[in-house]
Image 1 (tube, rainbow, N blue to C red):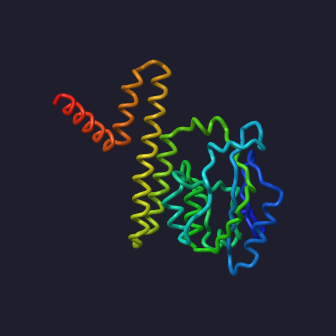
Image 2 (cartoon, helix red, strand yellow):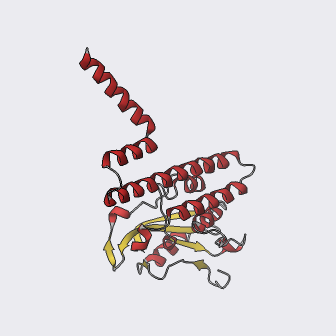
Image 3 (cartoon, rainbow, N blue to C red):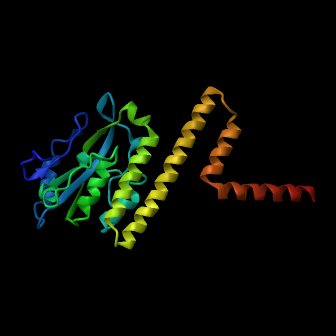
Length: 237
């Protein structure tokens, strides 16, 4: 970032890709905006061995739905929203005016932390509705360290909450996101353990799925038990 000299910044990991028309279309989209702006586009998830082969089952839409982009980025990131870094095209002034950089002290989620700081500047945001970027899915991405990812996201959320010391609304949004991430990673880890246990014959499927259900949806389990008891009572009578 410190070495960048151009008017615009495009991020791209070495193994991902861009469509030839991406920069032209996004420059055209933000060309009429007054002041520093950013553009982002749709993308597709590609196979590890073939950048042209789409994997729609791993796709999560990048499109922001409301005018409050910052709040939406905080609420929906990762659980309902994914914007790979290569989807963006930034006016370089957005990074320069507040010396915004990726926080390398974070073990992960430094991209989300950076985007939150950029969107806090309230720049004009243009969406180009076309799949102009490719995200290559590696096998390692599917078996990443869930505990480390959870810890990194929670650290990033804590840093964002610290930035909004007097903004009660944003602190509340981020607190809810913190709770959501704790639940989401816990549930994913539980299912991974359950699946692994079933594959290795550690415990019966009924025990595994029962434990998962009690953790993920205790209210649903309670209602099912109540209905079962009522049914048994009716049958007895």
